[in-house]
Length: 238
Length: 276
Image 1: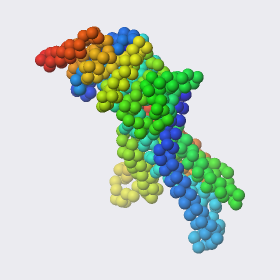
Image 2: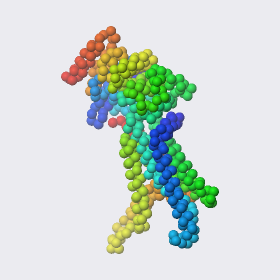
Image 3: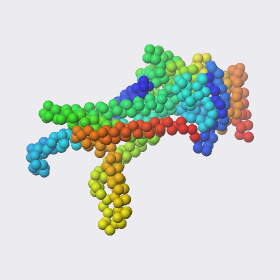
Image 4: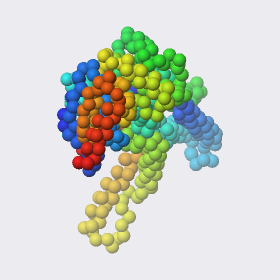
């Protein structure tokens, strides 16, 4: 569903991503792990077509994102790291706006909005202005806008960052429930999150994929932690 | 174009969810209304005793009152338009919502035409307010319809060109206030340049002892420079049209100016995809 080949991104002279290649199958939930500044957000932004890569190709479904941006973007739901929302709008009008922009047919508009409102637990704040929502509800709304129109690929950039423990549990539960219906790529630097939510983890450090771990739910998360630290330190020694 | 309509509708409604729509329309109503009353009272005074004001007879209503009023309205819109344009694209960048828009299945034209369309609707509302002022006179005087129509058209065309400049500036700057100030600065500079150019002598003021070979060259350069300064400012082309004189070059100027800055906005938005 997602195929990345030799993806490279330069910011001026600084190389943020160095020939990164990986692929994600349909229905998989993959975590992109890495310390701060590893290039996770850059990767997410390239995958969603927000910015171009310097070199390399990114295929979403059958479409290369740079060559067929509209077709590829139709397949993606994206939650950016710092959830940007229109604070002056109500939750209802915002979700309706997103559904229209994503091309949801008029006849399915209401059911589509109702579905994500139910999935993300936004019923209580449906008529509220976005500007007055708590961080947790803003995050849920961010997730709802990503899920509207039921895109096959969902890309989530650090979806639990800055939330309190209760909100983290709620958002994780939401993401867990996405499995099967959507292909999920999730970026985070919290190891336990990956072990809870994903079936595979790609470890990104200094712009390179340094390890790939298949997650076995029966294995303790300490093993993933060890594998992560080993990959990072090995990279550091190199 | 369905997506452009959706973007435009959201933008237009957000003008009126926040105070900015009311502020700009309120300011336009206040300033153009005050100017209308004051200039009308002055015209009444002039027409009662024209000799006192240096006129040999009662001056022409359209020439003395109506067309300068339309030009004033155009200038007013020019200076107030940064309140509209500063938020169009800059605000999307500033609060990060551009990241959402650019990852939705939208074309650049949907975003640009949607945003520009919403600004044009605000402009049309402002023109309706101006037209309401003028319509108060209709029962009492024989206003020439051509002057009225072309006057309003000149305000619209000038406003459209001004909005396109503002939209382009807004696509370059990520802080709405800075984008607004830069647009305002550009309009002010053009306005001053236009006024200064009108006061420049028709030929270069060179001393008689100047070498003849150089004189001809400098004279040509001076004329070119002066006509550029006269033709470039946005408000200068509205003057003829507001008098009811329809010149293709004035209409072409506004249409080309709008098209040029919309084109630049496209390039500016597209520049994110230029691979580095």
